[in-house]
Amino acid sequence: MKKGQIYEGVVEDILFPDKGQIRLEDRRVSVKNGLPGQKVRFQVTKVRKGKAEGRILEVLEHAALECEPACGHFADCGGCTWQNLPYEEQLRLKEQQVKAILDQAAGDSAWEFEGIKESPRRYGYRNKMEYSFGDGEKDGPLELGMHRRGSFYDIVTVEDCRIADEDFGRILLETLTYFREKGTAYYHKMRHEGYLRHLLVRKAAKTGEILVDLVTTTQTDAGEAALLEGWKERMLKLSLTGTLAGILHTCNDSLADVVHNDRTKVLHGRDYFHEELLGLRFRITPFSFFQTNSLGAEVLYETVRSYIGDTKDQVIFDLYSGTGTIAQILAPVAERVFGVEIVEEAVEAARENAGINGLQNCEFIAGDVLKVLDTIAAKPDFIVLDPPRDGVHPKALRKIVDYGVERMVYISCKPTSLARDLEILQEHGYRMMRACCVDMFPWSGNVETVALLSR
Image 1 (tube, helix red, strand yellow):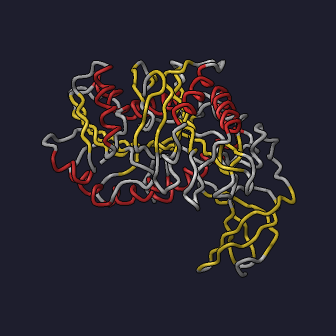
Image 2 (cartoon, one colour; image 1 turned 45 degrees about the vertical axis):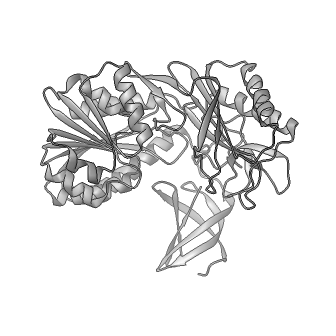
Image 3 (tube, helix red, strand yellow; image 1 turned 120 degrees about the vertical axis):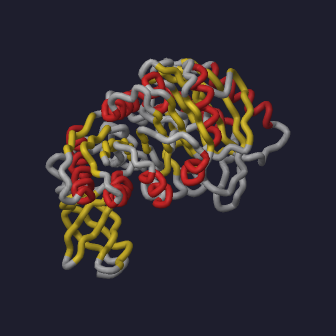
C-alpha cells in the first residue's frame, strides 16, 4: 500500500469522532465522513507504521441505515458529519464509542454507564455561528458561509443550514446580498488583501436576543462609514423572529484565519445579549465562551448537578470555569465557589453574571489553573473539572489530586482526553463510579461526557 493509490473497501466501524475503519490487506485504513456498511472508493493519503489514512472519493454502495440528508447543503458543506444518518443511530453510535473508550480506560474497575441523553432540539439548536467570506471557486462571486468539505479556501453559502436558527440564514443572506451589490472584496488569505472576513451571529434560545458582528480588516478607504451604515440599516429592516440586541463591527488584522478581536465598535444597540439557563440569567459578549446549544446545556448542567449531589456548607472549585455557568448553578447550595479560567474576558463576564444573579459567594480568578491553584488559600470539598478539548495539563492534574477530595465531576467534550486523564487519576486512588453522555451536537460526531469520580 502506497500513498496516492486508490482502493475499494467497506467501512466496518467508526471510532470517535469520525474515523471510519476499512480493513484492507494487512492494514486498517481510517477515512472521514463514512458510515458503517458503506462500500467506498478511496485514495490513500498517509501510510505510517502499519496504519494508513485515506480520503473517500465516491460512495459505491450506501449503508442499510443511511437516509436522505435533511439539509440541502450537506454534500458540499463541512459543518456536519452525519446528516445522512438517522438521529437515533447517531445517538447509538456515540454511546458505543464513548463506552468503549471509557471501558478501556477504567480497566477492571466496576462502573455504571448511564447511556446518552438526547438534545432537546435536533435542528436549529446552535446559538452561535461563525461564517466566513470568500468564494466558491477561484475568482467566483462573493460567498458567505462555511468551508467546503475538505477545502481550506472554498466557501459554501449556507442560508438554509438546518442546525442554526432560521434567523441566522436571513441575516447571512441579506449581508451577502448587500456586499455583493457594493462589490466589496473579501480578505484573501494568501495575498493578505481585502476587507470582509467573518460574520458572527449569536442568538439566545430563551430571550430571543440576537447579536450580529461583522468582522473585517482595516484595509478600506474613506467610504467605510457609509458602507457600514448601509449594512446596519439592512439588518434593522429584516423580519426576524428574534430581536436585534446589537449590531457590531470588529476589526481583525491578524494573519490567522480565526475570528480575532482587535477592537469592536457598536453600530446599534449594545455589545452583549442575555440568555437564561436553569433560572439564572447570563450576559454574553461577542467573543465570550458559552455552550453553543442552550437547551442542551440545561440538560448537561442538570446532569452535573445530580452527579454532585448535596453541597451544603461545602467549598467547590470549578476549574476551567469559562463564563462561570456551573459555578453559579452550584453557588445557591454551596458555602463558597471558586472559578478559575485562563480567558480574562470570560472571567469578567462570570463576575458580571454573578452580580446579575445576586450571588455573593462566587469568586472568579483569571489565570492558568496550574499557577492559580497555588494562590488560593481555601481547600476544596468538591472539584468540578470542565477542561478544553485537550484535557487537563498533567502537572495541574497532580496538584488537583493532592487536595484529596472524596469526589470529583469531570465534564469532557472529548472522551479520549477524559480517558487519558482518568488513567492518571486512577493511579492516584480515584476511580470512575458512573458516567453518561449528553448530545450537545446533533448531526456531528462530537458529544459531551460527564463522569463522577470517587477516591
